[in-house]
Length: 466
Image 1 (cartoon, helix red, strand yellow):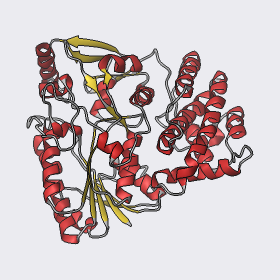
Image 2 (tube, rainbow, N blue to C red):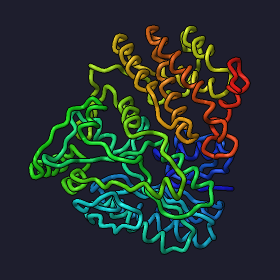
Image 3 (tube, helix red, strand yellow):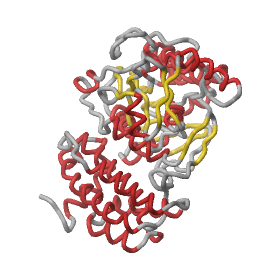
Image 4 (cartoon, rainbow, N blue to C red):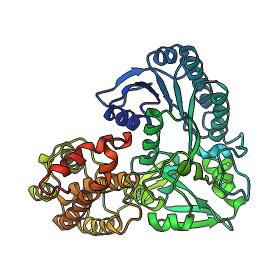
């Protein structure tokens, strides 16, 4: 199977390319610029989604297309958004029809439903009424209709608000403001989905045969106050009229990317019904909303976003680059390497964790070690608490990823602060214990491909389980 990923330099395109390559899929990535971390095992072509000839040439080489190229700005350049979102998608559709593409995968958004006051969770066949002035949402609806009318076999997903430690989006920027702003008198229930679950779903639907339309989110909702509590941010509510006028002023002054057209979404963001996701597609999110918010908190620790600018706070530990960075375990303190090696058996997976931690240590900024020790204790305690459903292989995948990400942070931080070593060992041991739940799925489920090495290592390592 050969797959084209448009928008391959984006927040979702690049990691999807990496995941597909790890699963043995031939990948052709397309974007205007090649990202620095584009996987070596994939082919890359420089091209603009607005260039019909470039799109046609790329589609001609593949069996399937994942269309992720999208203009993410809001109200700043309406003509550019139309050229990329609408014109670019029409180029993809035309090429897919011309070359008989066997499957087209598109990531839409729950914002396509629009806002209907008092509406319950939106099912996939509910009417969509996005405000035409909210261009992002309106374009999603238009593109959905044109894709559905194209006749090309289609898998289309509507994720809710995507968050996580390496998501760079307007939604995450809003969560990083000094205070979270809400509308006075409104309930403001929100629904999130972690980036790992979006990637895992896109991988599964790209490599599988299923077509159709489905919402993607963790079940339930969380209040704005609970979001603020988890993120450690204060919540302030204003009357709707005052808030709308403030949004317009900040937009005109270039201090914000959104104006009051987004106020309806702030008052009542669409909540997705996930019944079809679970019962028809057999897919379960591996990150709860609260765990996803905690993961996001780690990414924005020490940062306040003020309009279009970010300011570093002095009252929080400065963590390594999000998720670690390519580096060498030689940077690490011997006690750190020894602690991890005592628990996890030799494997490329373990080597990658240590290398990422080493790279994170080399790129860290100076920080107050006392804050690091407190942070390590708190984060380990939160993640090591009881977790329901961890015998489910899908949930276990998320558990392993969560523990692995925290382990990378702790590996980097413990090199400076030995007091974090107990938490480092505890997280490594929890990671080792979480692996057996993957055994039943790793040989048959594509979304576990990257964890196969870890399963094999634990099966045969010095602490092998039966």
